[in-house]
Image (cartoon, rainbow, N blue to C red; front, side, top):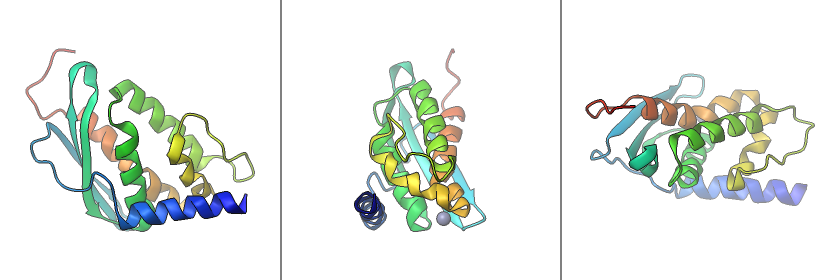
Length: 151
Ligand code: ZN
């Protein structure tokens, strides 16, 4: 378990140092701002949706702690190519992962690399850091800036 923790820690540090999909994409049709006042994390998620509400492109920019930046980085990698409905499911699984009882198994199936955030459940103050990007992504999915599409 200690080895696993070290691996998780290293992954978070790596994504904080070199965040993936980092940078504004003003050409994207959807965007939303997120703010976590408890820690001071701020980010903007940019989103391009294709047919069937599939995530064609997603990026983020902002300033925050290591957890919030790494979470946004890993999230953008994770949701690319998925549909809005799948993203909603992933959000629920991720939320479970970071808020479950600390003693439970760290394994939440289907989340891949996002499992690195399982340790966050031991630090309730950090849960909002880890979930900020997801809340922002959901807001971007809902806030369609393009002319309204038929459902
Ligand atoms: Zn934070």
